[in-house]
Structure formats: C-alpha cells, structure tokens
Amino acid sequence: MLRLYDYWESGNCYKVRLLLSLLGIPYERIHIDIMQGESRTPGFLEKNPNGRVPLLEWPDGRRLAESNAILWYLAEKTRFLPDDPWQRANILQWMCFEQYSHEPNIAVARFWHFAKLAEKNRDALPAKMKNGYKALQVMDDHLESQPYFGADCYTIGDIALYAYTHVAHEGGFDLSGFPAIGNWLKRVSSEAGHVCITDGMGI
Amino acid sequence: MLRLYDYWESGNCYKVRLLLSLLGIPYERIHIDIMQGESRTPGFLEKNPNGRVPLLEWPDGRRLAESNAILWYLAEKTRFLPDDPWQRANILQWMCFEQYSHEPNIAVARFWHFAKLAEKNRDALPAKMKNGYKALQVMDDHLESQPYFGADCYTIGDIALYAYTHVAHEGGFDLSGFPAIGNWLKRVSSEAGHVCITDGMGI
Picture (tube, each protein chain N blue to C red):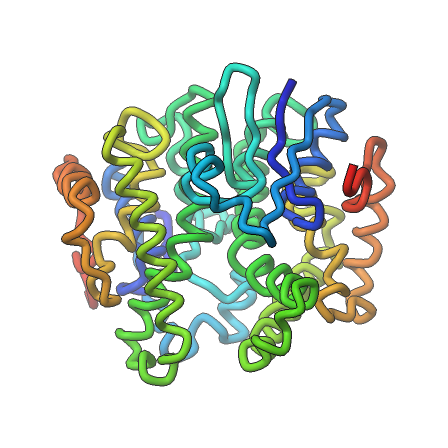
C-alpha cells in the first residue's frame, strides 16, 4: 500500500490526499509533526533530503516529494491530466503559478496565523497579503471566462490551486470580493470523491 | 517565429533561451525591462495577467508563462525530457524544488544585489542566504552519487537548476564548498548548443 508522509493541516499534503481520494487509491497516512521538527530528523531527511512533506512512498521503496510532482505522476492516464500537450502545458503553468505566486503568500500567511507567528512577522505580513490578493485577482479574472485552470474540465491544476485557496480565510484573506473563485470552489467541492482538508484529521 | 518576452539578466528567462538554443529553435527576443515596470503595463498584463517574464508567444497567438512550464512543453518528445514516467516525475520534483526551495532564496539574493536592494533588505537577507545554502547542500549531496537531476542524462531538470546556480556567486553565495555542484556545472556548460546567460545581452 502507498504510504503518505503527511501533515494534517498542510494544503500541500491535502492536494495529494484529495487526488488519492478522487482516484479511489487506498493509502496509509504517517503523521509528520512539522511543528515538532519531525520533518528534519535524520530518519526523515534520509527519506526526503529537502525535509518536507508531503512525501509519497511506494511498497517497492520508491519515494517522490513535492506536491505538484506527486499530483502529476498519479494523474497520468487519468481524467485529471488530459493527453493534449497544450492543455498539459497550461495546467503546469497554473501549478507553477500556485507554487511561486500563490502558496508563498496565501499559505505562509495562514501558517503564521496557525502557528501564532503573525506578530513576529508583522513587518512581512502586509507584503504577503498584498501579493496573495494579487494572486487571487489573477485567478478570479481567469475564472470569469473559464470554468477551470488550464483545461475545460477539472484537473490537477484545480486541485493544486484549491488546496490553499479554500482555506485562504484562515490566513486573513476575504474571498467575498472574488465571486468567480467562490463559484469555482463550489464546483470543485461537489466532485464525486471529494474530501475535506480536515477529513480524518488526527486519526 | 516564436517570440520570447525576455529580461536579459533573469535566470528564469535564461532557462528558456538555453533550451531553445539546445533544440536549435530560432526565436525573437523582446526585451521587457522589469526594472522600469514594463512587465506591469496594461499591454503586457493583457499577454500575461500575472505580470512576469518569461512569456513565450507562438505565431498563432498562443502564449505560455512560467519558465518550467515552458521548458516542459518545448522539451516533450526531445532528449531533454525522457518518456519514462518515473524519470519524468523525478525531473518535475527537482523543478518544483527549484521554484520553491532554490529560486526564492538564491535568485532573490542575487536580484537584491543586482538592483542595489541588499541594504534595504538587510534583515531578510540572512534567511535567504541560509535557505539558499541549504538548497545548494541538497543539490551537492544528490550530485555526489548521481550525474544529473531526475534522470541519468541531461534534461530540463538540470536546465532549471543550472540557471540560478551558475550565477549564485552574484548573490553572494560561495560555491567552493560544493565540489559536486562545480563538476555538474562544467558538465552542463560543455553540452553542444550551450549558451551563456550574457549571450546576446542588450542586442
């Protein structure tokens, strides 16, 4: 059985859990408490030298890190990653956007709130909020004329962007000014096989 | 002919120039002076709503942003992106590592020096240096037993990581403690069709 080294509250880990659920693939969850340094122990660094979760491990010992690379690999030959080269390019473009322009602002602001680090980072927080809102605006503008990100159907591009967008309010972001995002969040969460970020938390 | 919206000093833009050169694909360079706000004009935002270079434009009007998505699309069916799914997954893993753990530290430190913003960012610089060195250590450790990143041959995974690693000294990083990186840089730069980041600068 697949083994997912996982941190419950992490949107990056949730991306993998969501796709595994949509694909109906069973897996074992190993909780790595990043707040207690469990992703930086010698034992874990041997599995992922970059010291991060999610990390997916196969029964034959192969391991893959980086949420979006895991999504890409699992989604090959499924409806969540079309064959068309141009659609694939656009899906990957949005996944790169997520990791560079979206996650470092929206996820980090959420983490600072969650870990009670907002006060410590009070000088850096305004830039995170400004750039996070900029990323949300890019998404909302896109969704005004397109139902999904990179293809005309629900794909791993949407999964990547959904993970931290749907919990952006936990980082202090107000999504009420982005109606197209609101409608897209509903479309994504109504997919058969959808799970919530909190599903199974702590189990 | 392909048109590349390009900023000479950008390693992200250089990635695309390097692959286009290796593939022998001719293209037109359009200089976007990001220091003068040219990537944020209404005209450019119409081409890329995220306001970033590189942006690649096809004669039929199609456009693709995000350096690593452009690399992936151009490299399909070439020797720079193998067919093997596991190798592809590992190449993408390293490209995600580059955009999340490497570039935001090493490229940003270089940019601050280049744009004379190091003094303004003096409080943030130590974390950039620390995390940049951490990324370099992950690379060096990998290269001690593997010749390339994600496959046993030179691929777009190497191109993505080469772009900012080979100019890391411009951000204040000392590469002398990473001998495996030094050897890899030489291997990459000796490839037929290799171009330097400064080639054609300002032309």
